[in-house]
Length: 500
Ligand code: NDP
Image (cartoon, rainbow, N blue to C red; front, side):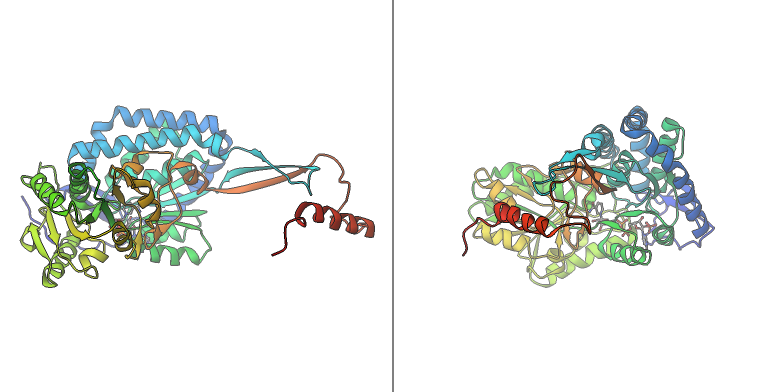
């Protein structure tokens, strides 16, 4: 077994790069580093397909997307194995991820017509002679840049919704999971028979080429730092962006919570996928009345949980992340925190063992920055106000979780995040009708749900005259009498309220 602790040397454009199994360092596949010309050619091919795809209408596209979904479902074990090889998560977790992605394709295909199709809206009393309607039209070609941590589920949140809305898509997967990206595109071609979904592979530079290749929108999922670069590159051509970036999600545990369930959810939310989940749990705020019980329960549950090849927790996919995790744990301990489980020694070359930290100052790295490892800070709070205030005191605002029998909804409403799960963890991601996305440094724009479909469209408003207006306002032939009538009508409509 080759042990690799550093990222492979950066290949140049025009050459190839390898995807490696993060658990063993073995080569999984070799892929081209695509040049700027190749990326532009992929966008041009996609543009050629976009008109055909749009012309199919909602029903035609639904048929094709359902065929793709069926093929993916039939070959799910193959996909799960590939995900497991390229990014290291256990195959069963990869299967869960892929299953959720398939469900999203079905939802997007099944709901696009209702959400985006032309519908009448009220034309208002002033314009009563008009019939007003709005429809949502595809933008054309959407570029999708994806991360490695959920290489199927995450990009699919953009790909499926952009396709269902009638766009062609050019997809650049992470350099760590190009094989998974290739599998998705290949199965689409098999199912649909046309290259409406295009693949480009390479490193970060290839992603930057896609930003400048004339796509009509760029959907980026990845770190906040790269998101800023993507936005800057897209600004050069006024290309709109969706930014799905990092998070620092908390679990809030109220005094009346089911402590056992909360501990179970916090542990799974923190350690599954080796903690490499944008909406993973990184912090817990527990009411003082149940703090001791929560801590002893989570420690009991964590005992025996291990990160190793073939275990429930896989390796850290990106070698450079190991240093980040170590620095966050070290900083927490240096500043008075205590490791009740794990610690700096738990951070190995490839695998990081579950680490639970307490007494960590709120301004430390482990509380403020995205750690992206199987680590957790737990803090005692006196009130739920304090829990909400501390939850909201990072620059991120992606997701979060609340455990409370009586006040779950009320607490959830006060958390500044795009999504909250009450008495469950990460549940919102599996509900296709719910929009997914963040605020602050977690990004903006939404994937999933009706909002996710609209994200890849432009609104097209039409006002159609039904009969000639009684007062013609949009003509140089407008009379003085008409102006007076307008003032009278306005008085009736809006001038009858009480003055302050
Ligand atoms: P990165 O930001 O490193 O990379 C994301 C993607 O951007 C990759 O495909 C990468 O290519 C590409 N890229 C890198 N540099 C550039 C550039 N200059 N221009 C254009 N594209 C570029 O993120 P990770 O892949 O490490 O993913 C982990 C991050 O993603 C975490 O912060 C996590 O929280 C976040 N995430 C957010 C989600 C959300 O929905 N909000 C969901 C999942 C993850 P390459 O890999 O080849 O360098």
